[in-house]
Length: 265
Image: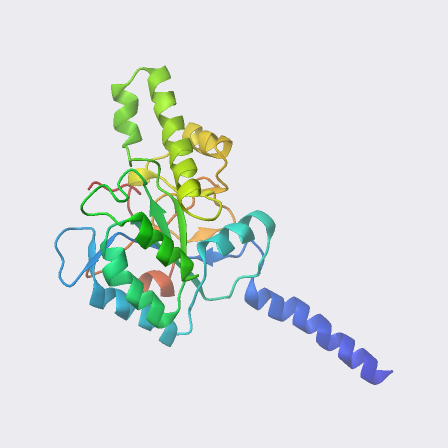
């Protein structure tokens, strides 16, 4: 009898204490979501991070026992409470679909076997000289390390377009950007497209409602704070990573940081 009670006590301890170590409930989750854009041997513009820095970031996460999790796991946890998340969870995302993702980023994530989500605006794919091709995206997706998500169809500035267009035309543009990106990506690549990154980090309540109507499960800004259980699902924050700033302070002390949460290219 004593042995049975001891076993039961052990099970209860595991459920309540180890379970909390893994997740802690949505109210306690604080997960930094990092966003990169371009990679190169040297810095050529404000959105470029050197490949050496990116490799050092990834190695530092591994050496300090952080776990890079798929972005989708975080979204599923926020929406449904599962799967449980590691206590030291971090997410890596990359916006735009620049060709350096193939040449510079892919070898690093293969070396360290970490998942990354690419937010793509499909109008550029296999069209713009700076962009990835559909074949490259498909091959990256086939590795099992890369998830593809939407960055609207051609990355418009919704604030500028709202000022420029008549209300009905603006609304039509937004709906086209949300639906066409999703449709094209789903047609070209295997898998459901239901995650979205707002271009330039610009969003508002109406945009969020339209994204939900278009079938998106979550959307992301670039407001500099960790994702918590209190976030609006259509305005989840991310930390913009630029060369020379690194990730260590963000990951070790993921408190809200100053910043508008928008970028200008």
